[in-house]
Amino acid sequence: MRLGIMQPYFFPYLGYFSLIKHTDKFILFDPVQFIRHGWIERNRTLKQNEGWQYIQAPLVKYSQDTLIKDIEINNSTDWKGKILAQLQHYKKKSPYYFATIKVLNDIFSEDFNDIVSFNYVSLKKVCEYIGINTPIEIFSKMNLEIEPVNAPDEWALNICKAIGNVDEYWNPIGGTSFFDRDKYVKNNLILKFQNMKLDEYNQNRDTFEPGLSIIDVMMFNSPEEINRMLDNYELV
Image (cartoon, rainbow, N blue to C red):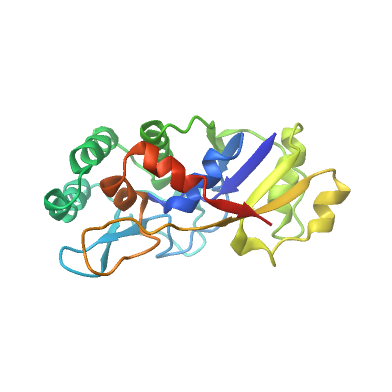
């Protein structure tokens, strides 16, 4: 079995979904300290005329040592409505605007108290739209007993060992220098790094903005076209 593990990101970019698609199980890793202004609470979409903007979920005030799994959403404002308003300019130029908004409305129709739950549901709904069937689980809800972790790269290693039937662990290419491959080899695990090749697509503007949220990709591409993009990677 191929396993992928990532922190629960907010409408992440294409490479995140490629990792989900090409693994057999995907785990949202949430028992570590939350880092402010990362990809867990926000992501980027196009601005109306040029450049990009953040869309985000507002958070309840938290202490510096709060874990990701304990981060709550501030529902005192209409943040879902604000996001939909920020995306309204896509309506004039995006062939899949209405299909994308339908997915978002389906997500936003539910109530969420914490960011992990929201990101979990949104990832599953987007995967369903694209046609990705990989099971996604939240680490803190798995009741998985793992060995003590002595180094950062041992979280994934020990999770693989605890699950028991994992043959390969896949990680984004950015973690190449972060992992000790020998540790995985000694435990009969193949460690692979996915190097995503981001294709340009027509955003109906002069300058292409790469690496935006999956929402932008969905606005301009059919699920079939998105799947072709998800398959454009190499393993290291």
